[in-house]
Image (tube, rainbow, N blue to C red; front, side, top):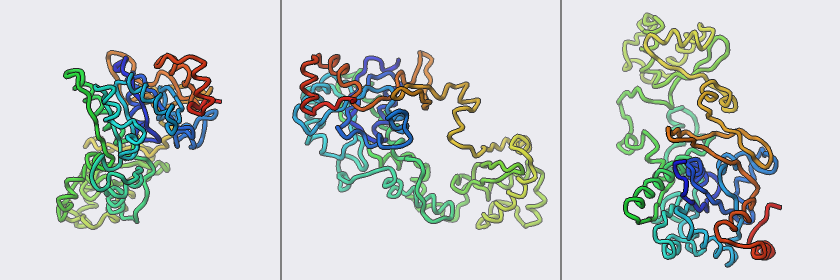
Length: 394
């Protein structure tokens, strides 16, 4: 596998950091996940396979699970010794927390000079907001996503159902780590990688520069995904059309031979439909209801290569033809049960990419990993368990 031989010390929790290290595990890295005695917060989620939350399993498949109490000096000493063996360390504490545990970048670099050390935070390692607690919903609100969605949809501010900011920063962090590893291969020099959720959401929003420059003003843009039409066909199927309906309706009318209906309304171009979104959607809906099925509607729009998408349940995607053909899901063992999880968005001609193991109880790999990494014997491990430094699976 691509990252075979790379060891990653994973001090992350919940979603942003674990999604990053899951990517590294999919690429073949040996990811050593450290959890506190109370476990990763995501373990409290439902539903569960056996005693492991499915949400936790998705983000942590393919990793080795250790549970070490970093509040105890012996626990900090254990993790510091693992850091000596690591090529990469990833943490998503607030700035300063890792340093207080003796596991900050300077501490780790002193013992392991070529470490690639990645910190994921809400607002970065410095600046007036560096110490703020940040979760995806907070970043969605403060980085304009909630306001933008509300304005484009014409609704009150509403929460996002998906933790976009967490997954976006996880992807950016994984990219930065890979770049730092390439730099290390060329120069032998490690470094501290500082990735913020806030700056990630600036980069991962196609409207950032437009909004900072003052917004659309009187300009008419065909690219308004927040206003895209969702219509229902005669058989009850819901479909999504792309783009701004007040500009796109002219191409749709041409494909469906409905231009006379636009002319009758005095709609001769996008300038004449601005501010009439409700009327445009109502007309599009009336056209859609004359088509019995999605294939029939797709065929009608094909002359002008206008795509559409069916509104589907996420739970049904595992059985879609494309997902089956691509092996987009893989079955892994989660506490004794077989569970389908997303495999990986990557495909490499050189070999398999994706999790090679499932997800387990916290502390499941305490003994095997510490014997291998630090050459600890059973007597030492028994003593660490008795002292509460290690939390055993039981």
